[in-house]
Image 1 (cartoon, helix red, strand yellow):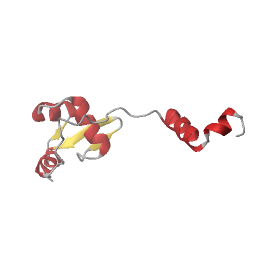
Image 2: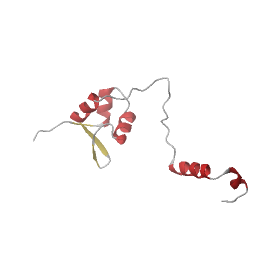
Image 3: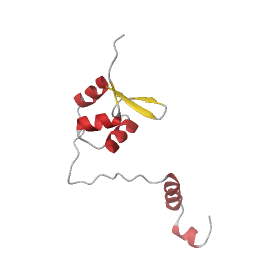
Image 4: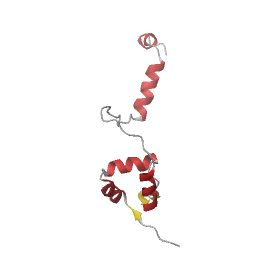
Length: 94
């Protein structure tokens, strides 16, 4: 059985010259295949190489990306407000 090198998110970030937070986002989104041991992430060197070989969508620097995530409770409130008409809210008919 061959032993493959396992990398930490910090080591991956250093190799790719990106932030650890970006690596963690990629791991959570499944863009980089990894092993999770408890709450620790480990990335096989072969999985990192596979990630680097994959074609990736180019990010347009002119268009800011929405990186803020809406809290689930706020999203629920927003959807509820959108579903109720303004008149029913004013008249408290809901």
